[in-house]
Length: 132
Image (tube, rainbow, N blue to C red; front, side, top):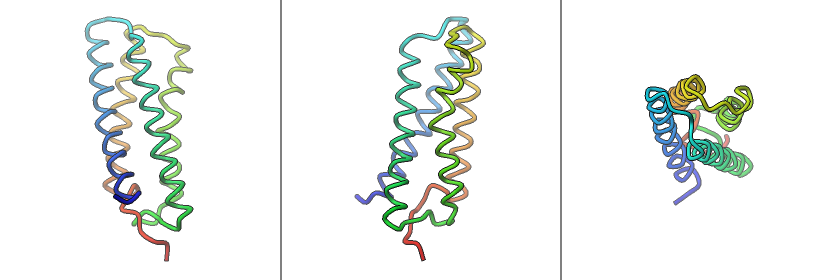
């Protein structure tokens, strides 16, 4: 399995994981419960997954590969967004774990899903081809 295929698999996992986080946060808000420590761990896991995907992108670009759409700068901007935004929301909310925080995390998780699907549709995440 080459790096491009592995990158695609991890990016698809990121999309599905974002859906799961969004549903989890929405269910937490609907039940009017506070966000649990398990959810914070899931946010950390998502951030780590996004970082791994970004590192794979950096490795492939140093090997002379580019996304087929040749939008490498846009790829890095989007990936930086996906790495930073969930911990950033946690920081902006100052660690709040109430219903409103759960709603904010649900909205952001679903926004990340649609952002990631947009990246796939516009061929920003792959397939990666040699730079010509």
